[in-house]
Amino acid sequence: MARPSEEFVLAWSSLFCDDGAPGWQAIDLPSAGPVEVQVGRCSPDNAEAVLFCFPTVSLPSSERLPEGKGFLVERADLTGHDGLRLALTRQAAGSTELFAAMACDVVGAIDDAAVDGASESKLLKVFVGRVRAWQQFMSRGAGPLSPEAELGLAGELYFMALFLDAGVSPESVLRSWIGPDDAPQDFLLGDGAIEVKATMSSSGFPVKIGSLEQLDDAMASTLFLAAVRFAGGEGGATLPEMVAEVERRLADEPGDIDLLRERLMVAGYSDAHAGQYSRRFKPKERRVLSVTEGFPRLTPGVVPAGVTRALYEINLDHAGKFLCNFDEVLSQLGATQ
Image 1 (cartoon, one colour):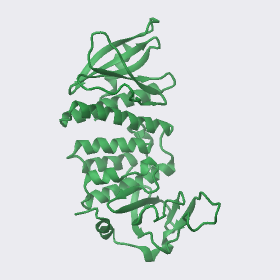
Image 2 (spheres, helix red, strand yellow):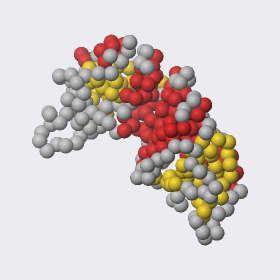
Image 3 (cartoon, one colour):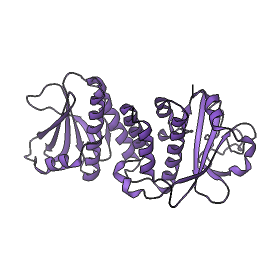
Image 4 (cartoon, one colour):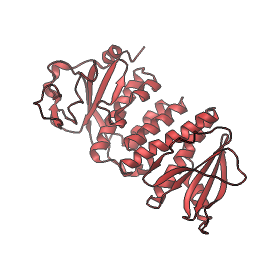
């Protein structure tokens, strides 16, 4: 769980560091397990930072540390301190509010892993992994998701909850969720792949296909299209509520919740924007279809030479013969025991 932002903001406000000579001023915060945590400012830029000391582990000198729009990670040498000391520092172009949210989240992730008994080397991996997730989040613009991306993520979370309810292990579900990495399909699950689509259309069951590869079963020997039709208005759940519902299903495994949050960050979702997602999604109908010979689609093998990209729409009302039973699909993929 993220730490409260107040302790970071108050500490930064009490520090000032631009005496012209490179150096640090820092205030101790409660440690995250064996990892010492400090809030600091760096001279001569007076930049806000969070410093982490890993007492006994090390990084190769050639290791490239994460850097994104608005922040960087650098090695920090403080007199009288041993161990690996890393500073997460805001760059001048970075939003102070977003950087504070990032600091709270990264420290909170280390807190959770430490409570779970993670070793110091594991805590270092958690730190780097969480910062890299923020790096990918910021590379997408660091703003709220577009309405179309919000709908797409709602569909993926809806089916993620169904996978968990059907008995697919949480680790399998989370590790298989490759959509945030801009992979052709959203889930590489068991022995095949599942592409997820969502619509809010009240007429027909149209879904948008974003590339020639998305429904190409040459990319995955067993390929399914899972689609959900949402209705708006009362009775549905907002995107943050859908995230919380998946987290509830993962409550017994704190490490899985942290992995989910990392994947959400890569997908472009941050709790910092939760208040801006007010639209509600009420599931009205779901369909799972086998993408096999004769399915209505465009793929690299069926378009004329020279066509390299395509964005098109399918009305699933015209693909009824490809409908499958959801539980049988998971069994066929070998995703459930």
